[in-house]
Length: 144
Length: 144
DNA sequence: TGAAGACTATCAAGACCTTGATGATGCTCA
DNA sequence: TGAGCATCATCAAGGTCTTGATAGTCTTCA
Image (cartoon, rainbow over all chains, first blue to last red; front, side):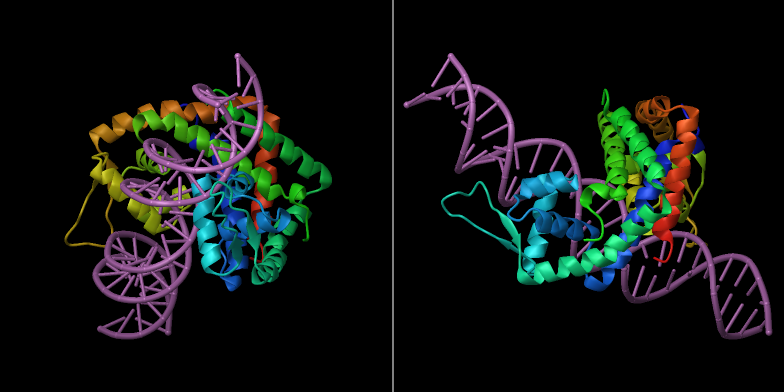
């Protein structure tokens, strides 16, 4: 074993991410939205007409994953997918009226989690955390 | 929207975690192991005879998730589950001989990712990162 | 002794994510 | 024009994770 389990930074990152996800999931439960669905709606609100592939990039997942989530959201009536018979390659996605209402409500709930994390750190701390995480990210990606 | 998208620390944490997972998944691919399977094998190596629930706690998932992974690993012949007819409540899990060989090989590959992250930061940086992530974790969990 | 509460295992359904493969579209450049 | 390449959408299969529910076991305590 190269590194002792307690020395592994991956665990700390994972634990923070897990706590973050759990808190968001709980905040979104009353709206019957999953975290993935919320992230997708958020990307749609900020980028009307974005493609499924674009959502995938914004949410850090594969296009297949975003397509599945879009399908669920379309079935819920929260998203409208513009199907063009003359161009099957690009299918812009937009929020429905209900989707727009819900994403604002969801963002008030889930945004509070983000706000708590934001408020728990000083501006300097936030900057430091971002920088260190960026170094980790680069180190993980290198050579891989 | 309470916070601008670029101001959200959750994204940085998620991105670091995603890069970390991707690098480990790639390192483990030649062994035909997923990250979840690797984490389970590691927990088993460090805690022989641990219960499924114990693995779940170590891996930060639900008992159901660990049970599913154990089932896969048992089918692969990497894990042996001791079934007691007189006590169906507790089923200790252990590595098979092949499982033991594979986990060591896997840890050399995946541990290198962890090592890269470790080496990219000074001891002080690592300490700071841990502390800040801990604060984020606590902030996310509070009130939720 | 016996009830309460905690822990464990497991089934089932649903959602999400991944890799791999396929096919269509659009842009660029020789 | 036409080949090459990047991008997009989608099908399929496998694995992981969740919530919810059911049930056996163990410990504690009145």
